[in-house]
Length: 96
Image (tube, rainbow, N blue to C red):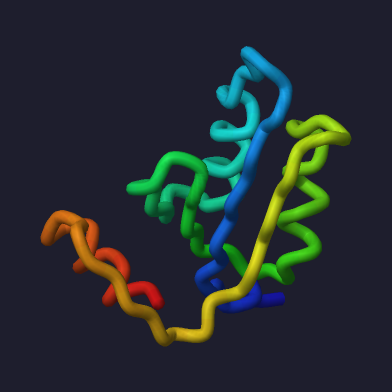
């Protein structure tokens, strides 16, 4: 059986507990991304994953508290941005 094709997903989060350690969540995101991720904004990641978004969300929920916010959305291929390095922009152009 072949693996489902990967698409790009945006992950955003706010961890609301003071002093919350992001390390476990970040490691979980990187693991889901299987080495293909973009992280140029504090609490925003873009990863490549076969999805769906609900699978990603469920995998990450173990690393957030009930009062935290977590967003996972599939990206359509359209985007606009400014202020990123050439390598950051290239990564986005090649993976959206």
